[in-house]
Image 1 (cartoon, protein in one colour):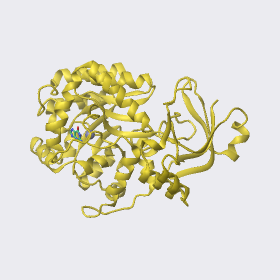
Image 2 (image 1 turned 30 degrees about the horizontal axis):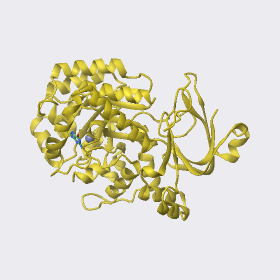
Image 3 (image 1 turned 135 degrees about the vertical axis):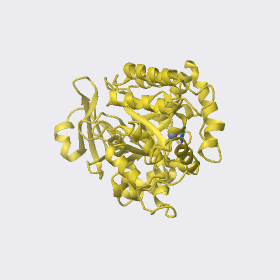
Image 4 (image 1 turned 180 degrees about the vertical axis):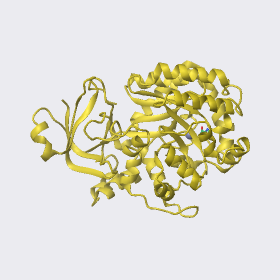
Length: 432
Ligand code: GUN
Ligand code: ZN
């Protein structure tokens, strides 16, 4: 049974952070042989039970839950940093042309390999990812995630209109392909399927209806889409679906709001929209680096909390600008602080971190499975080195509280902070 001695970060059920400066993490196989957390807490409390055998001592390091990225596009790995006058020109000029390349299985496989390696290098151990409209792209990502035994959810994108040749799919075939991929991959090892209509403007009513029917037939499959990101996008969606009360309501009208339905952005919502998210159990994947890069707007944390909307963080690469959860948490702080279009808040560092770990897992319906280091969780974790850069070493050494320590890492951290990423294996031992 592997036992680690190190500082240890984890979260209580109410989202508060628990930190042991001298902690113990014990990991062992469940009945299927999957590595899970057996115990986590203060060394002094747990050493009598778990410290008797070999212990891997990691002085100066912090073990923390692997990060959960609630919204990312694997085929946009090479689209990062493409400037445009907002979302719609960005899609038309960069993203759709690039995504055409994923028709080729070899190309999809090559990018999937780089993408998973980059997630792991940055400490991301669970992701909900868009593929492209080509079934081969989703297939390639499943294969690569399975090779790493990673918990990953993806799906072939549905987009049967207002999309160029090469990414536009056929209504009927797209639904047949989706169901075949669900049957082939959902629940295999740690993989999950997400029914993935790109966004309402690029799907016909028939495709959205078919997606909703599949969502009803496969209730534990995820739904993954975009909503209320950009004002031009919203105008377009309202024109295309005039019978729906709002852009978000379009999804409700087609049976696409329920638990395990994840909508990226959720920026420009009104009161009934927020109540609809809360009441259906659908959640927001806040994607702050993307929203700042594309000039989309600022997620309203105060209103989401007041109404009780579920949420967590996503990178939204390649509208988003970084794979690093530290950059995403930093941008979430900026977004929360913005006080011209909504109430500005100072989100606490522990809350920012929670949004990218246990909070994101809860929003995905995976509380107690990933995103935390409580007993029973799958043993996905990162080993952080707060001395990774000279400035990080100085600032973290002077931190007088947990909040100061976490904030120093959020503000100054990047992939250099992540010394090791450990994925729960069916047989222990594979580290990146
Ligand atoms: N809306 C529809 N497609 C996309 C996409 O690829 N990225 C973002 N950020 N928004 C979208
Ligand atoms: Zn996106």
